[in-house]
Image (cartoon, rainbow, N blue to C red):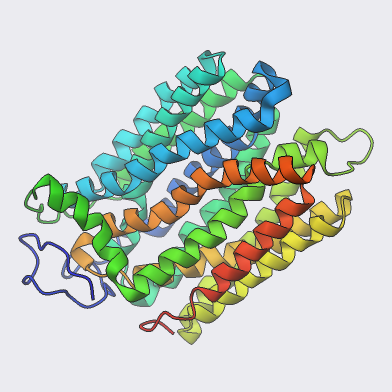
Length: 423
């Protein structure tokens, strides 16, 4: 068991058991918290899908169409570095302050001017700078929002709460795809709209989900603060949860980040269907499948008290989905991929989120450690654009990319087997 530097609310210097309960003694879920978690995550994923998945890709293509894949990989990779850094740092700062809502509000409100800036620039360098700022403020928002579940939801309801969080992905993806496609020719307006949605949702969440302030943590020396980020990875179960999430996310974003280009350069679309319109069709198909698997996965994992089984099976299903467009370039194959991948990824995100909250090394460091776990979300996004562009360039197409992503998903499914403290 890894040791963390105890704050004033810690019982002592020894490690505590895995954080299986609320962070604050007697904490109970706020009334109406689950719908607010759904709204907060829906807005976040809408921006994450609509901005880089459509608007940013189109903006980069408009600036330099001949080098769009390389430029998109560069911008995505650089911005993911900011996401990787800001998520755990913001989580640790919110732990230290004993509050989540101010961080959610600050990140949400700052998204609006940053999206305005992103829509105003017209060089690859400035696009990269603006989107790096966008990732920074969004990960301040995300780090605090992610910590609400281990803070306020009891273990017996973690599956349902994680399902509410997980539903934000399919619903937000659909909203993001539809809005992105609707503003594909007016991306500046589209950026502003996404920023306004995040800002409004942050205000709604913080106004309605009132929190009980937790005891602030004593400041630590800088060296100890830096070392503390690695403490969680010293814990056996948390480390394997981190590895599994990183592998699956790497496989997922290797393909998802280039979806618009896949539809343009790999898929044989029906006559009259543009790639932007195809994105707006595929994401709702996948989202419906995600809704079904997210709700069922979260409920069934609570019902049978089995997390590893559902996580491993859903990651394996995502791997199967990636094989479909690898063997066929038809539009039908892409539709089948969207549906099967939605079933696998939706269940995975719902149940794996519940699993992770059960293997946190210390309850009082929940936000920091969830931020460390979110490195497994953001870190692979640094590698994915560069790796994907290399695979596509070396192979001359996207088939090899689907195969590599499928292998990564299988490895992600296997990574949950060594976890000991959760069934």
